[in-house]
Length: 141
Image (cartoon, rainbow, N blue to C red; front, side, top):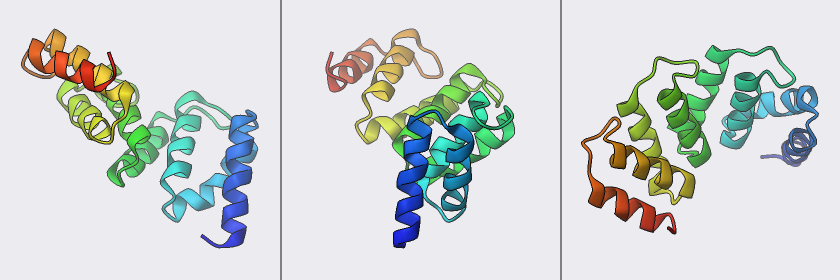
């Protein structure tokens, strides 16, 4: 990233945190288009929740998918939830497991915990109490 891109990214993230979503969208969109996965993830969240833009489940899914495909752990987690809940996409527990597993492999505690619950319940996977315990332990429980 150039210095201007660094500044736009920092300003975009600050705008997002300050809940100035239309400004965040304006600053982060060009960076997302250039492949910045954190910007993609934030844009997905804004579309998903109608923050500073119209609620757009298709755009949310597209941006979340792009960031997840590029290895962004929080986007993988977010995509897992979209599949788990059927948010903007057809409910698909096995897809949810796939994305939670990828995020869990990066050490994301929320994904480890959600995955553990899915193994405990046999949701999208074969029920496996031992695997659930192992995942809970990895998550710090």
